[in-house]
Amino acid sequence: MSRFKRAGKVDSLAGFKAEKTEATVPYGLLKAARKSGQLNLSGRGLTEVPQKVYRLNTDTPEEAQQDVSFGESDRWWEQTDLTKLLLSSNQLTQLSDDIRLLPGLTTLDLHDNQLSSLPSALGELQELQQLRLSHNQLRSLPVEVCTLKNLCSLTLKQNLLESLPEELGQLENLTELDLSNNHLNDLPSSLGRLICLQKLNLCYNKLSCLPDSLAQLTNVKLLDCSNNQLTDIPASLSEMLAMEQLYLRHNKLCLLPKLPAPVLKELYVGNNQIEQLDPEQLACLTAISLLELRDNKIKTLPEEITLLSTLTRLDLTNNDITTLPASLSLLPNLKVLLLEGNPLRGIRRDLLTKGTNELLKYLRGRIKEEPDGADEGPTALTLPSQATINVHHIKTLKFLVYSEKQALNIPDELFDAAADQLITTVNFSKNQLTAIPPRLLEFQSSVLDIDLGFNKLTCCSPEICNLRQLKHIDLRNNQLSNLPPEMKSLNKLCSIILNYNRFKSFPEVLYQMVSLETVLLGNNQVGVVDPCHLMRLTHLSTLDLSNNDLLNIPPELGLCTSLRCLSLEGNPFRTPRAAIVAKGTDAVLEYLRSRIPT
Image (cartoon, rainbow, N blue to C red; front, side):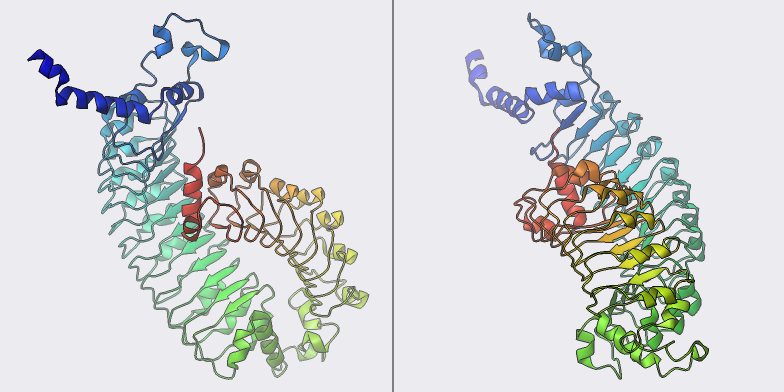
């Protein structure tokens, strides 16, 4: 009988299972984790966390039980407590209470598993700063999680949450909270106590209203409430003065929210039921750069839209607009105007297909018929192509333009006419310039935006570093292969456009320009990017590296968590695969993070 037991199926199967669990977490990996404090078990097909992982800090390592001498690097008694545990992309259905045996954890990544509940012992991990729980099957969040006072980032995207505990407001150090793709009908009022919050993602839920307490989140820079059932936005949200990006796509809004957010740069309200734009609401958008109003029911554009002097992109696709105010062409920074799918009268269909520049040129031509500015002389409102100097642009808009002339240099008469003006915007694009005009320095105390695209610049003069107020510079379609190190003193520069040049690597000086939010480097020959240096750019939200020569994408690029838009298509790398790239920025960054070796 005993022989049968020894050879029986039960014993041998149990032994096989134990052996399989050991095989999925090699001893060498555990040994390395004792030294580094980091353990990456992502994508190993685990159905449960092996006990050896939970007991990594408490069990004596095998070396101590052997009669061997230790080298300098093998002194087990100097081991480090585990601080980072990555368990993403496995098949975990539960987490044991033994997780309390790892109290030193600062990062716990459990995203992309099959967890339907969490142990209360999670609340004992008081050092925890990052908790990633996206892509699971959680129906509720245990109250104990709300006691993690040091938690900075909590991601719960793509779960089955229908409500949240009121205690959520206790996480007062939280800077990022992602609750997207759940089944939330409402939000706890305590959400307003998360005063350190900078990113709040609520998209793809079932919210019909937002709590007034949201107004207390005065540090939130990005709020995404897309794909909900919102019919209006509480007026109290106007107190969220740090807001830079607001997403309200695919809701049931009938009015543009009145948001006097002084730094709001991007507002997305496409796919709603907005019928008219209130001039007062438009006037509040004093810093707006991108305004998306597509797929609504807007019939007319008020003249007040010309007050949006910082606007660079206006999307009015698929509305009911029949006429456009000619003054739209006076928006000094407007680069993209999208009007497809509107019943426009008086504008030829082929004109719409020619692009923004041609359309704005046509609208500027119509301004001549209007009587405004008669006292400024006959050149005040004439087309730039018909007048050497546009006095109206210079005096009223502080806009110095000499574009599409194919000129080898900018005439001194233009600079002379602007001598006493605080010029803010310069457009010298589409000429034959081989160097940056030195007289630009005359406006160094005022100029914010320079467009030198479509010229023949082969180098960028170090003198440019004197333009200390500069926020935007467009150098696309030139012959540049490097940038001067002196540019690092441009500490207000937010965006730089370098598409279609001759850069073979990411310009070194850009790594030092921490104010940058947008870097466009598409269609160059860039072969390498340093993610460690790129991480210094904590405000960088848009990075275009499309159509370059990148043979591999470093996994550490996934740690650049400020990125909202990363373009990598058209490069010769093999991973991430095209299918992952097509899913968008979040999917790419998540994939890259999962590939980081520990």
